[in-house]
Length: 231
Image (tube, rainbow, N blue to C red):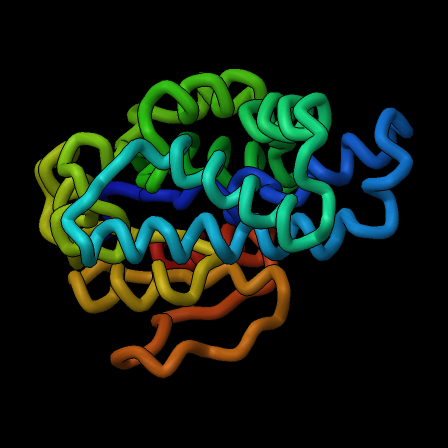
């Protein structure tokens, strides 16, 4: 197997989707958020993904930023925090500048040193991805940022995974794909990518297709594995 390109999911894989609420709690600006932050963050993320899938099925694509805003509004209502415009604005502002995981830049640097092109393949629209990548300090470690915006449908549509093949002129089996989302890994494997599931939360394997080619707990382990595949 020859690996000619590496693709990384952004949200949850390189970028910590829980860092927005965590940072706001740490600021002590909104005391009422403290005991509801974990629930809020979880509901926000789940609803964000649900809206992307539902919109794909409905043929009603909107930028991922709109899904993110709508999901936050749902989460705020669900946790009894709706109606505070300052809280909403603060959370959305922080979401545009999510913290990168400590192991994110390391694996990107290693892949680059190995001569393997690196790109994001994300549900995010280009505007939010550009801002997030710059804020996380990852922009210089990527050859491309690929967005579902170009095809008007969200992952796990095969049309999204085809973006990686088209960008680097490679076959699916020549792509090494990293994601922390089991459903994303299932879609990527069904498309033909070589998959590494970065199972940060020790989640149960999805019952979709053949399962991941490889499972690791973080991106440091992912690089240890990837280095053997590149040898």
